Image 1 (cartoon, rainbow, N blue to C red):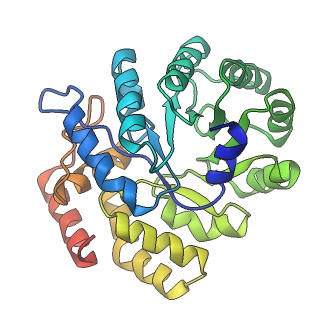
Image 2 (image 1 turned 120 degrees about the vertical axis):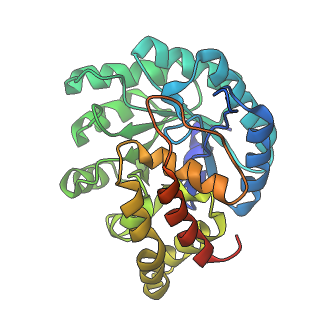
Length: 303
């Protein structure tokens, strides 16, 4: 799949990040991961991000990363494209990107670099180096220490033909409007805020109709129903699901830092697809929070 083909695929439909399965000792659980992908792939997501943020990329060793991407690509072959999360320092991100491409990933999502702040020139150099290291499509994740201006993105798109996507995790309207107006159809634009459904209608109005859903991991039918409601401007369905699920879900998620990942793994366990514990420094939900989440899920009915 060439970058332009991937760009077209991610320009519509719902995207998602499968969680990464670990066993009780915290090691990668290959069989559990295959079972999860086999379950999720037919639901209709346009692409799946393996070893992304919700997949706990930050906790993975390079050998684990390689195996996860290989398993995801082989399991989903012919069903849904796999985009690999990559990140860290420039040299580390390049090595991850090359390995993902070697394992057959259709593209990579470049997560923010580690810890230190950087100016726009530094961000451009970092992203350009990763893009030029591979032939597959690259999506940049605009979040935390990686906050690009429209001017920087324009420079990058001129230098990097395989930079095909911009995923926004900031939620700031003015910069997003500037980027969308300045870059036009050169990029595919993705909503990337945690629990993106809450922002989906607003982002659609900005010209960003595609987003990635974490809850797809445990309520895939509802996630697809919500996406279709946003696409069709079905405000009744949107408001009902916001009131009955997503806003109460946020109240649980916001109880602790890091729960954006932990609550997804808790949901997967509740519906019978236990992915094991999160890795340190994240912590799992406590029993009363799990029970609150179960009540919300049960109200949605079969998935």
